[in-house]
Image (tube, rainbow, N blue to C red; front, side, top):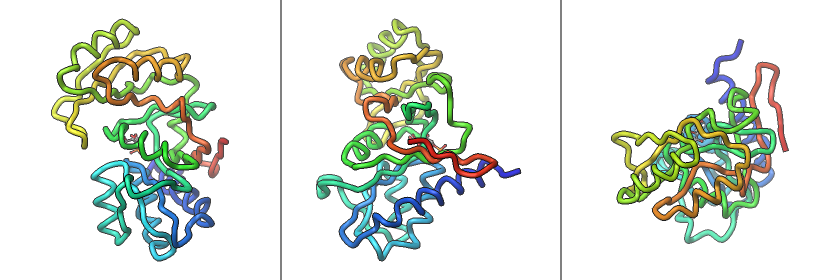
Length: 223
Ligand code: 5RP
């Protein structure tokens, strides 16, 4: 029986195998955040001489990349990336995701938006029939916290401030419990339109292109 850690490793290895042909001297790789993304970063280090560098979706990942000798570029210096690789907190069969358990949702959404392909890596426990069991993170400007929380309550959710946590952008996170997310793109748009919301953790308007989900029987590919 493979442990969850083994499964994460399997997903990270599968992503590396998939992106190997994309590693050219000009290529810049988009890199996500979290324990699965960390394993991907560790594997990517073996190929560091084959590509130009990476754009990181968090200070945490940037530090790990730099520590392993991979050049970290500012997104403003990069016009395009062949691929962005990241984990997810939940993913459904349409490859819509909830992300932001690690609090990096805003930079994840920005960096992935510039990549040609989004590859989601996760163990199969992240695959769900409907999104919302995992609390939906919303990054908010601190002064808008209560105003955004009221809107989240109107949508049927129970927002909880992530205590003691400040994002890399200097903002706060509301984790919204109990949402029934049936129309993910609509809810993503609706939340984006609330003043003071920086980003919400729904990745449905731009879903993953490929999901590599590690199971006890091997990798299950969606997309
Ligand atoms: C961080 C994220 C991560 O991708 C998500 O939390 C999954 O993390 P892990 O690979 O540790 O399970 O969105 O903001």
